[in-house]
Image 1: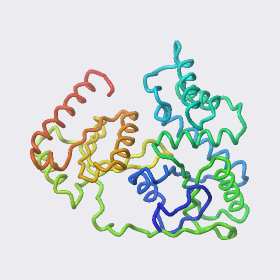
Image 2 (image 1 turned 180 degrees about the vertical axis):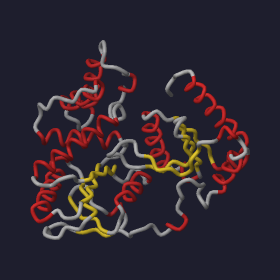
Image 3 (image 1 turned 60 degrees about the vertical axis):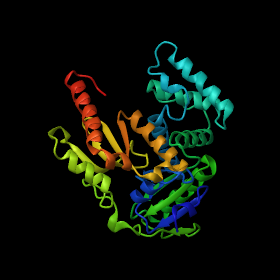
Length: 328
């Protein structure tokens, strides 16, 4: 079974797939896949506790994704002056054009801008659905799935609490909940989806720290960079996660200290769904303080030295800014 076949509106057990790989595959897929946020279960004594912990993490994710889910808010830097009034007005306008509930979205936007937790003045059902919509919007997807990793040894009461809490979230927040990790032993009312334990091309998957074994362009760029001392600190094919609940993404080439990401794109990135996914990913990286430099395979093959010069110019500028005490 592939990810596209998994339900996104109810609770299901997922077996055979590593949780991190599931999240990575969803993040690298097209917009037809949901946004997948990982949630590591800490305790499961009561249904309300399971729900509260999940909603708190969703709120953390929504705050971290701001302003990606509120068009126009990217121009507001601080809550000072008219900032809070402006962000509330933007939220009200956005809600009027969408399915969002305006008063909740305005509170959430004000909290994200100010860094002060939102006042809990709405029913938990409103909070659940509002947070789910904001996170899905922020990640550029139509639907949201919570991927819950179950620990060993939950016991019968713990399993009942988890499943009931997951069903509440699916129903009231309008999300899918995929349960992975330790299998359920005492609750049998959920359907089970099985995924292959590794992709068919695992032998040729990117290896962290090296160019992709099938990419002549990455190999050529690495050979050219290796001749320049300034290129020290680069790392190929690194996994990056914006925050604890965000879907991880694979970065072709990263200078972590300089906050610079280089992507080498093949022709498949010109397809509308891949172009849109790349755009959404670049926006999140930029919100996290990274610059993203994109080059096509053809450009690297045609003039790799020009590509190296452009990267080098940017890296030198970032290091110069650091020396002057400026943050990128």
